[in-house]
Image (cartoon, rainbow, N blue to C red; front, side):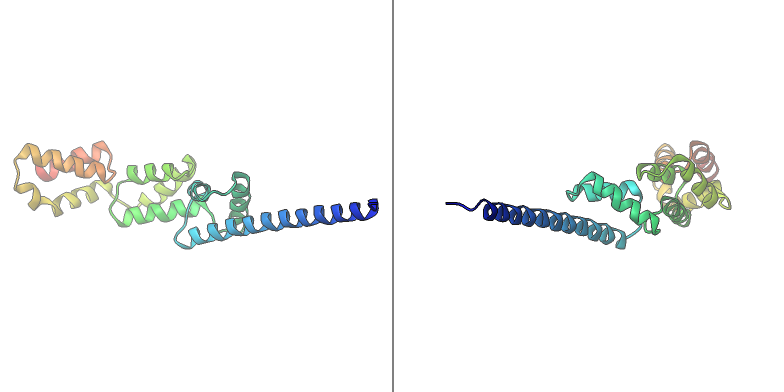
Length: 178
């Protein structure tokens, strides 16, 4: 006949093994998530939203992603304000208009107040109108090969794609191309 105590012991051992396997699997998944997050951050700063999207695309659980990002924020590896400042300064250095960087930061999930502060700080010493005029003057030779209407159209498109506002674009085109 069967010994009920032995059967209970085997069942208990089996359940304990399953629990240990499940715990180990969860730990491995969290380690994989953490490793993936750090790997993404190693390639460059990312906003919370950018990092969450990338990790979600790799198949990690949403709740685990949020916990991991919160931990990375706590130690300073994820910082939307610092990232916004860096990207705004890079935009200034590359002669990009404020509208373009504002749009890109919004798409990256940075909140409006942080965008405003970062962009205002980076663009405070910059004369965007002068920058737009300099960009057009550098391309003046290209515009001299086409008729005036086409030159104006191309110049306007160029400056708008660079992220300059309508007023700045209009004044730069009128001043440089006439």
